[in-house]
Length: 251
Image 1 (cartoon, rainbow, N blue to C red):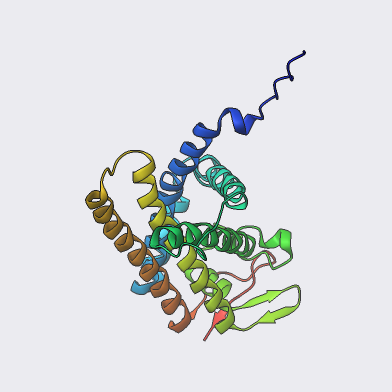
Image 2: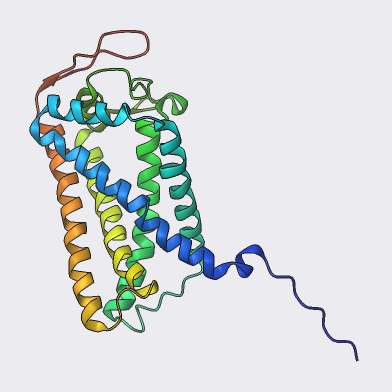
């Protein structure tokens, strides 16, 4: 009697453990580190346009910026998001049968991952690839001096393919996206420490959980403060009028 031929394993099946570890790690470094830097930079809007412009300009003047963005931000985010969707699609949600805290946390981690992914795509389309999407070229230039005005205009004034979206709707969208990203990162810190064997025992996990929650709340507060400052600050753009960038006067 002939034995059944052995099934060929896929790349994912062969390297499942490694991919899971890399997915977990990429959520902390570099993606989590970038999220902290991004929220901290945006919170500088609280101190006025001049402080924010100076901070953003310093980041844009970093050497090898394009390489840092590609290999330190875009590629890790792409891997984390796409493999995270793969994990979420194969997840077994049983919160209805077992409504325990850990099960709810497990479900929310996947749901907020979906929300954060969609929010990130919209954010990148608005601020990094607006000329490709046909949403206007003004947000693409790092050379324009008034980054505050560009950011303010990008948050407050949405004209998507001729459809004007009111500011309250865009701010609400950003609040939801920020919450999803901050929760996903904070809970990711907690699960990362467990999966990597850093926290052993319920007491250590509880302490890390409190610290991770504090990080998430802080990041969310920074993001909301930035949105509030952008929505309430009266500012006239100092960007020069040109074909590549529209003159923005915000009142």
